[in-house]
Amino acid sequence: DQRFKVIHQCNAGVSNARNKGLSLATGSIIGFVDADDVCDPRQFEKMYNSLLENQAQAAICSLLFELAHRTIFQGDKTSSSICMDKQTAIIELYKGNIYSGHVHNKIFRRELCENILFDEDISIGEDTLFCLKALSKASKVVYINEGLYHYQIRSNSAYQQKNIDKMYTSHIAYRRMNSLIERLRLNEIGKKTFLIAYMSNICNLLLIFKEQNQIKDRRYDELRKLLKTLYLDIFKRLTIRQKIALGMKVYCFNICFVKHKIKTTIIKIVRGRS
Image (tube, rainbow, N blue to C red; front, side):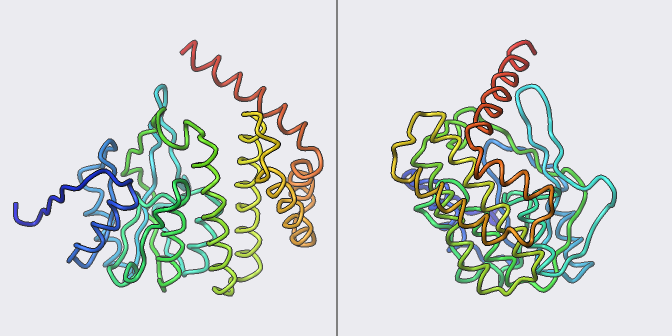
């Protein structure tokens, strides 16, 4: 089939492979698929049609996360499709309720991807950074509430293995996203939503550092200080519930760590029995 191009190269990571594909792509629509995942046979047809019908520059479908013992649906259970402007699309990206930073459930008009590459020095969060850059150039985005992409959760993935150096690159991704967010001039809701997501990323990294007894690592102290700085900067914009939840992570981190350990232990026991 002459529509397909097969590129053979040494394994240089997923970002390098995607960048190679972007450099050789000639079509008007850009999409991404991982080799071990499963697409609904009509995924790209439905997304493309929705993109045309709504005169949008990007289309997003729901994800199905395939774990060993169950499937998790990430999407909106109340509507069939949603049309969004750029600000709303970016806010939803960081809320993570109906979709998040994965590129697999998104298609983009070619012009959104021009002069954008995946950062090859980032192992975790590079796709969210790419999505932010692409969506920031869109005027309209359409969301389809159908689980059309089956994302396999692999036990040997960089995220699941929790290699500290690789996990820390997610912080580098968020630093770069923060610089872009500042230039985008989002509304107050957008800025707050992003900063809460940024703080959640820092908290997850701190838990991993502590879990692996790496609290003497200079990056651990830097993250603790940054978390407190962000919390104080955003404090006045938080609801009471958010102030308490985030405040616990900032000032009572050891309690949060104990809760995290109990939760992960229970999950392992339940998975072991099923």
